[in-house]
Image 1 (cartoon, rainbow, N blue to C red):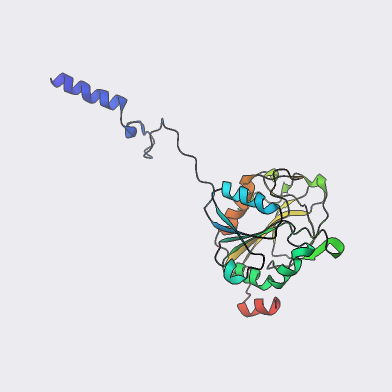
Image 2: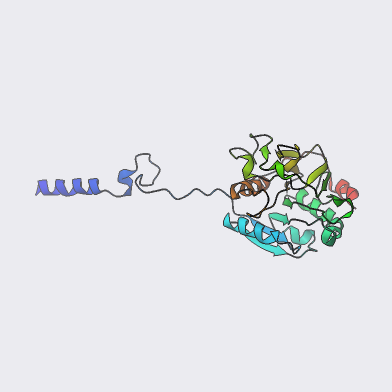
Length: 259
């Protein structure tokens, strides 16, 4: 009987419960495949309804990464923006049809970032504006773009591989310059550049308690120079991190500047 009892215990240990094969003490049977790691924090994201087709492209990509995505009206002001962790402005939002809307709400967007929000500015693409050029007053720092671009700038190259947005990624993971930057304030950090023109393709900045990131590419997988889900996921993740103010702007200064 004693032998049979020993045999039963031995067989139990050999066939084993899950912990019997846990050689690295992580609480998971080493012979069972681990679940995939979560790469993106879940965020509440609003896409401003400009009517552009890129809205669906952004929504598809961001939902695939696990984010909760909805659309908000074109004329949404600060009270609405503050309901979301991330606000996305789709492609061509600086066109004639919607340029005036964002100029009128510039102060609301700047205050949204100041208060801790992540503003994701898609390619403004002022293709039908006079001179095909627009100043993006709804960004917290100076930015003017032209709708022209050079297709040979695909894929983009990483400007600094040690940044939150670029570490471990290739240039092809991130946006290329489908708008040409005419002027860019010193506070922006350039993430990618076109290999031919050296134009910025993506850049970001901290402002007050929040972040802003600019994507001059296009989220469609059928675009001239598509980027990956890993790339847009990283841009959003890094935009969601706690920002360190880079200037001493006060609420009064902001309102005075963007009145």
